[in-house]
Length: 358
Image (tube, rainbow, N blue to C red; front, side, top):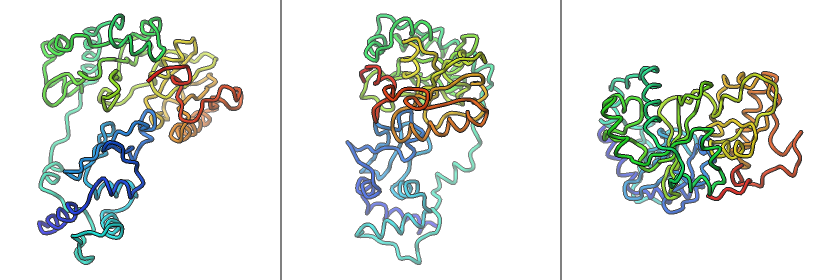
């Protein structure tokens, strides 16, 4: 097994992960590529989230925690093939200085000591939901209102204004150190890491993501949130609270009463429609709609406003299927009961359609 590992390491060192990515069909821009699972991303990963390390021969997606690894694994997930098939493809595609004899290619990935130890590790403890709710609520009570902050300027640029900030209780981190200390004093590092607010170094995660979008329950209490970077150079641009998204954004409008509702992809698009008086709800990304959420839309007629791109159209079909299985009318924006003039251009999202600037 040690010999297998040595041969695999020598094989990988003879490859350029950037060249391999190009052969797989990825467009490499400044050392980044689009995520193989772009459909998980809020906007189909239009701004590439996967970093390539040429010196280490590794890749890492800054949004998907399970998308990372070496050059062989990049081939495995990109071509949906086995470890053996990935090695054979690489040897067929590249004139390599180091090759593994066919009879010596391991049929499965050799396990490193670190991987073996990880398999034996105990699963992470689950956080008590009541405690988590209390921590999240306390966190939001320590945050600042949006007015007269950099977050306000960012929102105005996206054409989302004060009435909507207040209605949806948007918040921002103005004094990071004060919030960091306050949470530590109240709950302690271990609890905060368990909930997902603090990183492994014992600090609040959202230093670069100071704009907070709370997911309010029907009693207008924050139960979940998404944090947003307002500096366009920060990757990833969004960080979600650890754990399961409990319900769609702005769930309170799903009250069971008859009426129209606009279903958007992402919080920013939802806020854009809310700012203009539309009844809107949001889902975190194109593939994030849960089948159990469909019943929340009972008695509603749904206009699906996901992004106008390949991922958005795929997500629209998925949500349509879930809703129609319950007899709920659901049509894409720009088709059926909506005029063609209301259809977004290719690549657009709702915020851009209404004049928001990125």
